[in-house]
Image 1 (cartoon, rainbow, N blue to C red):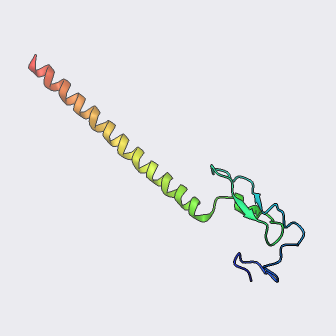
Image 2: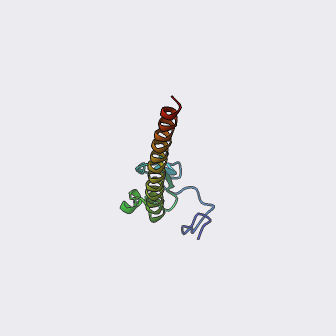
Image 3: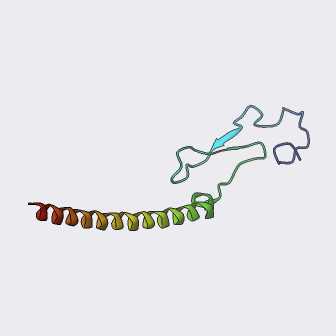
Length: 99
């Protein structure tokens, strides 16, 4: 095998068809990704894996973690709103006793 993970019978030979390029191909951009991916063509044409366009397990796990975090933050926000309402009511009560 060659250094690129593909079989190479004559690594010093450059007279093979396609020796002038292209050497890389741009793959389709994945959803949610800013940058395109590239693949080398030293071992022949590249077939894109249809599953590569789906979020992997790690991304799905991160999405679940993010959803749980958002839910927790919303609960804290609602609790803080209730506390503010209680404080406003208390301030109003104290001001009414003052006058």
